[in-house]
Length: 165
Image 1 (cartoon, one colour):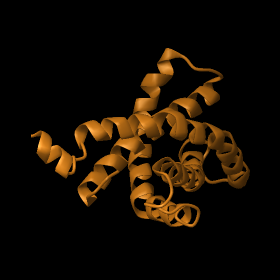
Image 2: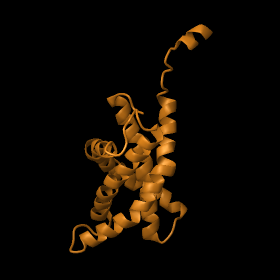
Image 3: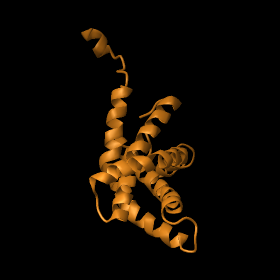
Image 4: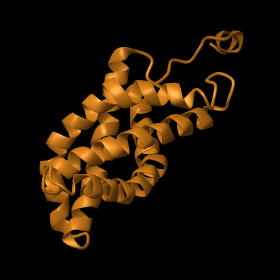
């Protein structure tokens, strides 16, 4: 979808905000024993730091690597666009979930101690199904819809269009 580096940065910012906020709400609700209205406000506080971390990891690590991995499975221009989008989205979650879960474990689950690996693995295992579903069914479609409204694709001129003008 993004056609330029500027559009890629904007798309990434939008996706990171939606994904990180959703995942922070999810993690706080697990820690608090359930979802309450208070959690939506608490998540905004964590969104700042986790959003910056998520943006950096996505732009420089997961984004480029997820495309390389996805393009081993699908071929842009040959396969249907929905399969390309799903492959990239799934690979992004496969990479981002463990990295972001590690950061969250260090920052919010007692820091670096003798149990860090166990806490990180548990956090990753709890986060992965939610992150995948959140990405595939909500964040991805929502962000792409908003992105298309901000950056509508220009209609290519065809003989048909010129004849109707």
